[in-house]
Length: 324
Ligand code: GLV
Image 1 (cartoon, rainbow, N blue to C red):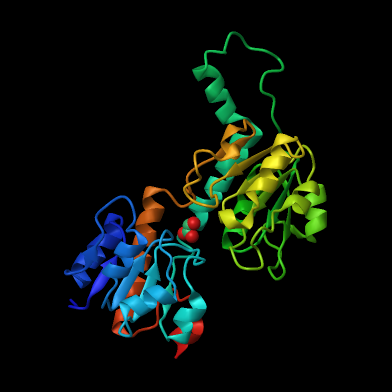
Image 2 (cartoon, rainbow, N blue to C red):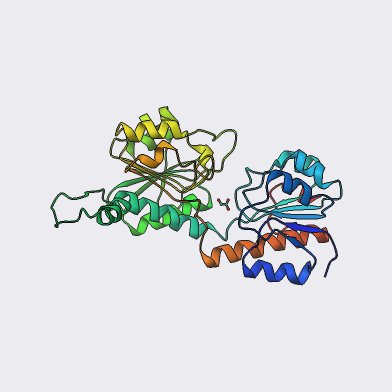
């Protein structure tokens, strides 16, 4: 049991919470559903030794200054770390932990759920009934796209991209991918981006958000896709230029899109994307299963404990800091 000062930015699932109670009984846990505002966060981190945050908090130099030089570890309950200034943490010798691996299957499931829902127009079908339009069966009602025999192009072939490819095998799809470094797996064939966009009936975005991938999906990218193609983004909203996507969907330049993530989050209610029938958007639910969120919370707390003990984090983002 430690008496270190710990701040946790949200009430986390039971598995992780039990570990917190055991190791840090005096931890300060933000109880509200809404995250702390920036001002509240800067106030709360003052003097903390360990911070466990979510992807909703911006962790930058200002925040690390507000915490103070005693800050020993930053642990995020997420695999993505684009909300954290990793270079700044590294400069200060602060290890940063994240939660890869445990959310791979859930996120790949979500990509497939969105892919199927978009291809077979599930949300439009639900709306159709709710709006009282269902009068009869019709041979041409809400026709969509087949998966069997179609080509799935995966942009980014890390853990999640590969898990998407694995699922596609079960649907008898041909899989191609674009990645500068990943080796082929699950019968997927590596191709350049232009080939992927030209040949894919479905394009799944599975790259992290970095300066290189920001607005990777732009007007030029979308113009290279087939007019019948479906785009699925379960990565980060910032990878996609939403104005360009709106224009492509509105003008039927591509068939449909499904977004698990947007920029910003939440998506403002006046976003024109919300008016489109051929765009479905869900509120960043990629890892949102009971089991996965519990495992993420456990791993995030394990990273926190290791950092507080001065041990190597089970999952360290800035490996140079963890090595030393
Ligand atoms: C979710 O998007 C995550 O990064 O864990």
